[in-house]
Amino acid sequence: MEDKKIILSGIQATGDLHLGHYIGVLKRFVEMQEKYNCYYMVANLHALTVRRDPEELRENAYKLLASYIAAGLDPEKSTIFLQSQVHEHAELGWVLDCYTYMGELNRMTQFKDKSAKHADNINAGLFTYPALMAGDILLYQTDLVPTGEDQKQHVELTRDLAERFNKLYGDTFKIPEPFIEKVGARIMGLQDPTSKMSKSSTIPNDTIMLIDTPDEIMKKVKKAVTDSEGIVKFDVANKPGVSNLMTIYSIIKGISIEDVEKEFDGKGYGDFKTAVGEAIVKELEPFQTKYNELINNKEYLESIYTEGSRKAAEKASKTLRDVYDKLGLI
Ligand code: ATP
Ligand code: LTN
Image (cartoon, rainbow, N blue to C red):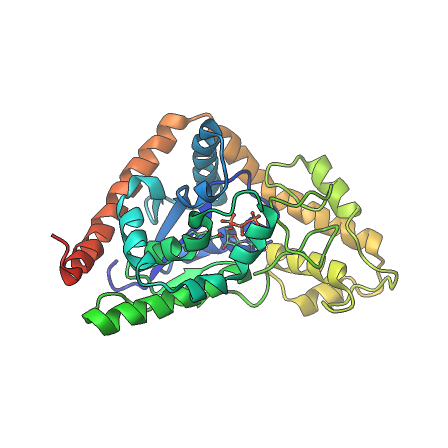
């Protein structure tokens, strides 16, 4: 187990997941557990940067945990845990706050976007969020961090912080690499294919939720924005809607974009959309069945996160101990 490369990633516990999460990260998490030593976290401390109802935050942690397992994560193979159960995250986050410059945080696109969206609550946590995320990653001596495209900047900052710390105090942290797929790292909205599919989109039919019914999924795909050309061809600049649907289809089917073009050569958008919608419905069916079972089995979910968090803490505490020693913290 120890000679396998280490993976760490997480999703914020902020609500139901959508198809962007599934294709961008969840499906990849599942594939990776065969080859790597994986740590998958429910990022609930990160969720506090926006005001949350406590009951909802608690429920969201269970939902995310159930989604991880329903998608195929296996607690026997991967360490699945809650960020709030491993106190080392908050501690290393604080230490790294003290080694991160305001200028670096100021450049973070996610901070700029989120502060524009939540102008009434631009709190210090929203600003220092990337340092907490760096702590998540560095605690596990992580080699690779699989995320969507939007998180690349945070992983790059994590590398800078790790290098800075290592230079000052000697080898402490492994320098992690972002692990971002060329295809699928940025699934776009169905109505606005120039913005990423997001939980916070307010446009109706823009986002396919993983718990949408087959009818809802088919309806949303049929309504997806395309163009007037009528040709299934991959061209992000000129045909963002069609290209996005092609990306979704190619990943679900496990075929190349060229194969998608060939399959729909000479066919119109009607046929294409039906095929995309059906592929999504079929892909999500086993997920939904499993999810519905798990979400009502809190006891099982508790046993997963308790054991996962214990295992995670074992690893994280070693790194934090080393950091505290090097810093002179008794
Ligand atoms: P949202 O914008 O939907 O609120 P988020 O990016 O703010 O989501 P998370 O929910 O924590 O925050 O995202 C978890 C992971 O899913 C990240 O690695 C992120 O890059 C990835 N992800 C989110 N949306 C997409 C998308 N549309 N396409 C591909 N990957 C995505
Ligand atoms: N910041 C990420 C979620 C996240 C994460 C992490 C991802 C928190 N900690 C560690 C990878 C590794 C987001 O907003 N999507």
